[in-house]
Image (cartoon, rainbow, N blue to C red; front, top):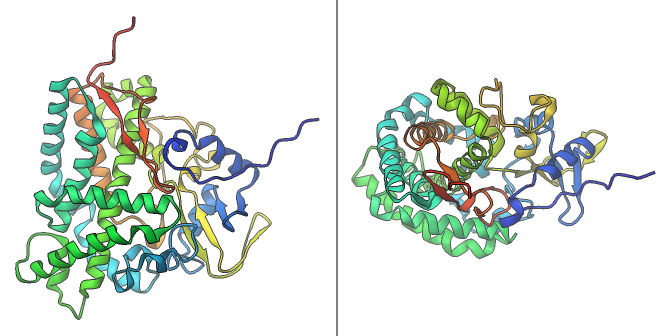
Length: 399
């Protein structure tokens, strides 16, 4: 008689991101509240459990950090400039109310012409060459373009985001946020100057709107924390979704063909691609009290990793084909943008970028191909994204 080995969770990074999905399936089916002894934290992988935890900020707090490293918030040294993602209600609720009015689907739709022009120009550049690294040529620049638009950052400064984001993500991957203090300091120093500039020379952006409220209403430190959230959260996640989507459409030509036959399916297909790519694969919370799930007690004070990517492939929520790409799948809810208090404020902007990229790629390069095997994954244990991904306007002919 053979026995099935107990499932094991391991944080992924770089090349090990290529296929974490069998690990997720084993945990969902056999150990949905998994304790990782090395690090002393718990992992939730089933949809209902992750959904409930994400929606209960009183029990699963963000204030002690979003990684499985204890003391990670204090190690950053950000102090009063703490990003809103590390705040719990009521502080989080009050500040979120000030910024979301500029990020509603209706407000975001007003930048669609600018996004489309940017995307078309980059795609035409790639098409003229015949091949390119689509991450470097389109996805990273697009994400920086959109984030910079909302923060009022001049175009000549936008490449700074990539360096800062890369350093901070790699620091988190190594489990020691202290090594990211220099890029933290550079980023915060830059935005400190920008905030002061916008107090006297406002523009049409969120930083200007916040500075207009006055220092008593919104401190400069809180604005710095918001800028940090936008820069680090709006770049690598968008790259992960877009690069992962191109891989899936290359691997599933039948589903791409459906989109080519019926472009009206694209918005719904974006939801399906968001579900399967889940760029933020997991983030941690801290239990504020003892919690019992599936017969396992999670003690108060312990880190709990909410595995969004595993939950988004749970057959209990999405049916027996949960692991498959179906561009016409009807989806009621996904965890790609989390849920509840910390639902991603940039969700509407992310959806818009994805729709425009998909529309223009399929219209201008319907037979595009990405080399999935040669794509290189970036370091970092919480966001699954490509560092580079070879793209061709046409697949290479068979020999």
